[in-house]
Image 1 (tube, rainbow, N blue to C red):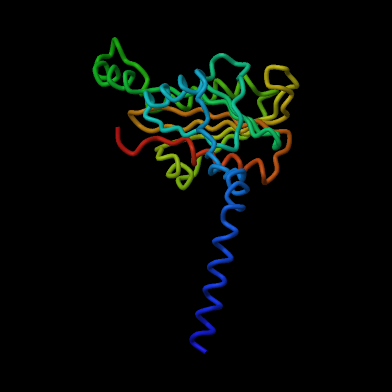
Image 2: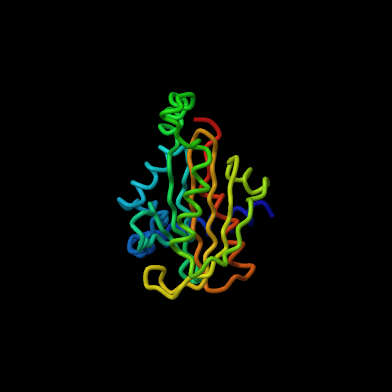
Length: 220
């Protein structure tokens, strides 16, 4: 039995050896595909680079979410705009640093001749001014932002304004907006205006997602 097994194995080895000269040219023509390259990171636009710098100056961390598309705000007061193309959802951002204002306030707060408003309350005036400029009427709904939402933004205070919009090209015909005015004391203010044509659960879900990519840093 041992001799028979040896001859069988010898025949198989000899058969493979005879085939190799014929197989080599065929194998040489088979092209091995290189591993697929991972897509390169999105090249930041000059608008995005400027906004990221402005965010850093205001003590805010911003990371561009992959599911959105950069767009252009029709209001030059705002720093940046982006949209979810298939969801009729757009956001305009206005960021303000309060650091220099806070330093000036500390210097002059005890001087009756040079009294200035507390910079930590600037978010109220900013939010109300933008609401008035955008709204179709004065029938908006204003609320204090709850503490759990403020915590997600690492913020101290905030107000929201839900308003109806006039049909204007500047706001791209959107029907409604939810404006968030959020502040971190001694640091900065975030104004985020969220546009929609339908105040449904998906809209508020998209609004709730803002804190995933825009929030105040823990320490400056």
